Length: 251
Length: 356
Image (cartoon, helix red, strand yellow):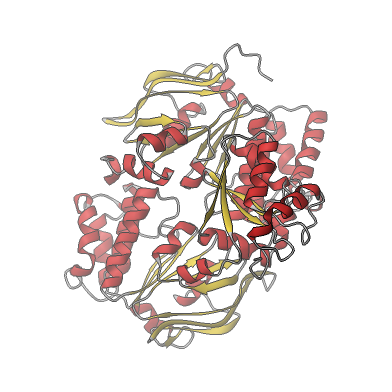
């Protein structure tokens, strides 16, 4: 899919966001490789949401540099938006439109031609086994199905990267795992996955993860290496060792 | 033991009976108990909280709180319970201190009167007491909401998903606070979608689709797992997940952190001594029709190594609450396991009896 010479989909150098005298994101630097599943973890208020908004082209940095899919977060925000998918825990499809209508709407927004949209939409519905529900309002679907649908819609335009903000919050344990099957499939197709989660077992499913504390990235490695470095048995212990030292917790 | 909360065959539907929220739910919570309702979004947890706090009428069944009927004595109940709803419900444009005083006044008391109860928690937000509640961080809001729910020294505390969306460190701190409250004799009913928090409760009810799957102590629920569970690990997690699902002797297989959790189909009443034979039978039966071809850790290891997997590690483990939840979900809702995702059946119901 990629015509880009680089195999780095996100390049982030000392990216900073300051609100008044409060430094929400403090010189974070990291790269995300094409096809990688990258876990972007951190304590509440550590700055992940602010960082993610900058990477999605929704907010300007106050310092540093970053490119997403080869586009600058300062000058090419619109190009970034066309080349990424985004999905959050807060359900963002239209509840009063049917599954098919939502697919048509979002595919249209992302500029898919009618023919391709038709074909991609049918594939998507078949993959999720939702043929019988295709004409039903999305609002009536169980939460797990909604989340799987929202994810599939977020990647219908085959973006280079998809941002997932706590996609599995509150979802039952079986559906949570089915959701990760979809993530792996997307990754196999070459879509880079950038994901946040509070489930530490899910951190293990990522190729690499970073953990933010007080606006900084305090650790970045594979789950196995992080566990070794912090002499921890689980990612939960790694997270605890790092985030416990957070000063910003109070606010 | 004195029962502080009882539900007797409670059923509640929404939209004129079209949408079942909770169906025939019964359980009770003893005085001073820390009881957890564990289940995903949409399981019916909040509906149960609203019925118990007299904000919602059940279609059928009866419930009591502190010995009072939720229908007849709703006013009295409102005076003796503390309720922290899932959504932040304090006044955003009042300060921390104003909110706390407001709720104390509402219940005809003062902050000073029951200060002992909230001291530990309040001291953490005291530096921000002049800040408007709407400007607090998530963790601080949660602590303020807990203070406001406690300010009148309630007999029963209802906490609806207090830790949802909260990071692992703050979650642990919150549970430490609950333990200290419990030590002061307050009965606590708490709900959570995080299965790993179940172990922190004295008793739990696992709930899914408005029905109770199981009620017991976390330990007893863990012990109720039929058969044996194994953790499997290899160099390539996603590939090994797919291949293990294709091993004919696999009964259920799902990712669990860096490991897979795998249960095997029982063999023909064979013990571990005959695993050599059942291995071969397992490999030779690609239909995976079960029953006749049992699986074994040795058989799976060989199968995976034949598929080119390296660093394969298989060990027997003690199932956790989440393993049991997945198993019980499979029993009651087979469509969850296979209906949506036939290409990769993640979970199948485990056998009712231990296989060996």
